[in-house]
Length: 368
Image (tube, rainbow, N blue to C red; front, top):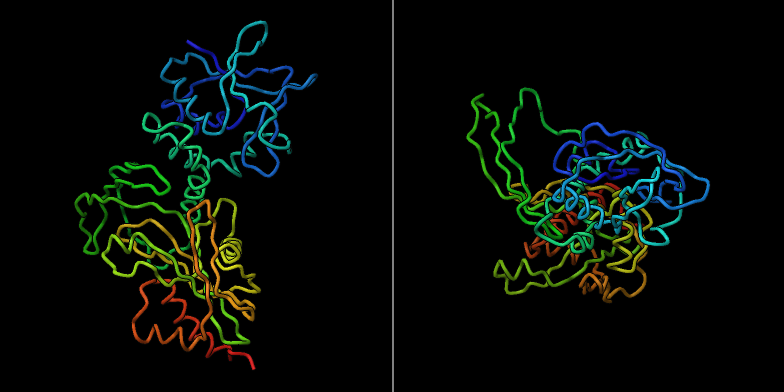
């Protein structure tokens, strides 16, 4: 059996239970001399490093077997930490240390309760996602998609904070199971739940496979001085699967919300990346599920005010992400003719043009 020093986020009992596969139980506290713990500047996690004259508080997790150590190794390796043996009170003690030189500049001191209040909920959801890949994928493969794992966790938390549109009185549901059955950039969730029907009876356990995509923002850039809109066009494999003879679709600017980003920040970043355009203002259209029967995703759509005086017919996107995006401008009337003739197949673009048609009437656009 092995003793392990915990100094950071694994001191959270819920995260430790997710990673270890069982509760950690009572862990004695100790003072570890020669090391300091602090948050990494601008990040959501702490770091430990050797420092003469320093000390830090640790908790000692005892009685670990080989299987439990393998789970811990997997989780910590996702973040680049490896298990090392150090000396504590003249006895060997195992601890997870970051790569030599650390993982970033040192920030403020680490307080477990303060950290848990700010980052605990998101980190617990991310830990569940990470550990669902244990025994299936390598930690290196999971580490490569850590940003989208945390972005998905953020999306789930923000969904909890959104006020419901309907009456929730006397609503009841029971989740029988909810498991990740495929891990990737997008996750596939197997869920079964029963719920109270509108007549008061309970439903059978309804099993579904749900694609978990996180949150995304869409933007339709518009120049009210020139009455121009900016559209993007790109190849979409989903249209190929559907049998569409033209899988190059006309769309709005769109992108997944990164962890720590507001919807407005995502909108501005994606418009720069996909169209090379800086937004001056944003007008919210709405927040909605694009396909709630099978897809767990919220879209937040905007009209983005921009200067489209330059000739916008160029290609953009992040090459590393396999993006090849054509951005071009159209007079609003030409773009809205595509709505009138039912020639658009992208829902956010269709909704955005309809919303812009209303805004133009309300705000007196185009500006004279």
